[in-house]
Length: 198
Image 1: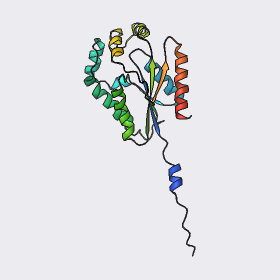
Image 2: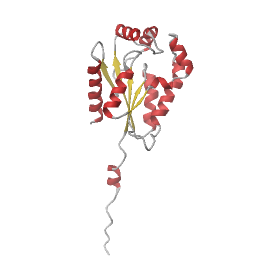
Image 3: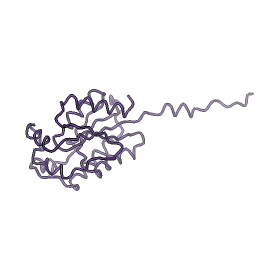
Image 4: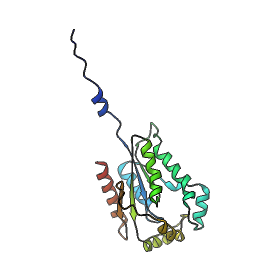
């Protein structure tokens, strides 16, 4: 009888491990175009789209609709809800495990809350796209859009609160300025594809 042992399945099991789930947060101050870009990215890459504003408590929406800036305390429950959503295992019948999520994530500490979801879920890669826009352009955009609870009056306070993600290696910076929307969307898709290797 041969003493040879059957080949180990360890390498096969390693190769067959689930591919990571990617969560892309499309970030930046109000009126920078987060929702439009995130929806475009989700459609192009087959990701699920999540509107981060839907996770705000009613009290937050009420404040913002009256141009009252949110405090860090106001944002805590919102960020934690998004963190919990991102780290939850998707349903078995979900068409994709990957998400494109809108979230202002104005400060590094806010982004760190979202990063924590990835740290606790071993198969999760949390990344950010920061849409970089000047305040003047944001004001113009906020005045022009209809039916959104966050108006022009919030632009100044958000710019004051903003901590640009310089030096944060998991953030892709995209200059929006006065570029055509389709050019911004194309750059975001290209940069995301590069990061994911697809």
